[in-house]
Image 1: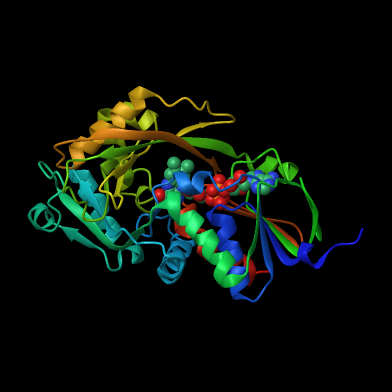
Image 2: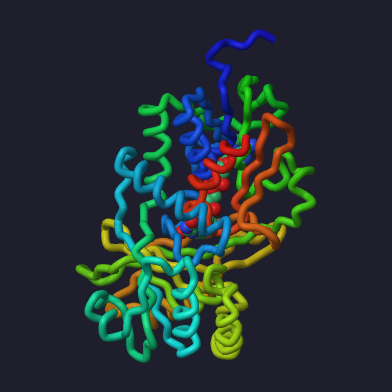
Length: 376
Ligand SMILES: Cc1cc2nc3c(=O)[nH]c(=O)nc-3n(C[C@H](O)[C@H](O)[C@H](O)COP(=O)(O)OP(=O)(O)OC[C@H]3O[C@@H](n4cnc5c(N)ncnc54)[C@H](O)[C@@H]3O)c2cc1C
């Protein structure tokens, strides 16, 4: 078969979500000729459905936290060039239970607490009037976080990669087979020295036989967009007690065990639905609010009103809101591993499969991509 030069690349990336785009960016920075193949007409997967909450504080100690640090730096460099606005920065996590304050104090004693601070409620009220602090024990403040509007940021990033870095995008074209150097799509056969497969929830497609031993399940999340009263401003991203028993940077601390027991007694239903609160704000003032976590081989796509009601109760307990009109609801899905936050597999020397197997891809993808290339 004769291949035209337009079909030959140093690297083909499968999937135009944040993980694929991070690999495309990292490769382009190294001077490689890159093509991204995406089966949909635009990315409509997890990468546009998330909070756009680029989180460092609370990520699991070790690899995930380190990758998040690096990814946060890269986002800081890339976002202004790609025309992506950092809508707000920092994190405020309100501890309502004394045991939650103990977890924050323990977190601040770790290396991951660098730059973060415990705010007494009076100080938090002064700095962040939007927080509902009645009965609060303390607030963890972290300056590291950044929030982007994912539903537009992913498209802007792809456009910038094409225009500024010459990355070729082939949208609306499914990859059917990868046998590097050949990549067979629904429209063509491409040739590439290397291939990175970043197909997220497609556990039964490319390299299914290599993914099977990893016991991956799908995790489905419910999300809401809520319009508060005019003029309501969040100081940064907001979380609360339930996040301390969910995000590994806190939940793996020994001090989190008694908190988990207490929350199981008091908020057993929310825990059963995997609910913890994250709230971020968009440029139009609306809040993106979530989330829940339901696991399975094929989670049903039907969002539960009851779960939304629970999430909205946590919202009202955590923010001083006069109005909260739901304007949109959606679900999103990611693969979940019992063992690792990120799976990097090498079917052969020239091929990598990279799946973020936790809800951390927006926060870590740029760091992961650098590691993939460093070790390749
Ligand atoms: C609701 C929700 C909220 C989240 N919130 C956050 C957050 O705030 N912060 C954070 O860090 N992380 C968050 N996450 C996790 C994060 O969104 C994911 O880890 C990340 O988006 C995964 O990126 P991806 O590129 O692997 O997946 P995707 O964005 O799903 O992209 C994969 C792409 O591959 C394409 N594809 C699949 N198969 C093929 C094929 N055969 N050929 C061509 N294309 C193919 C798909 O069409 C898709 O566009 C959240 C996740 C969800 C679901």
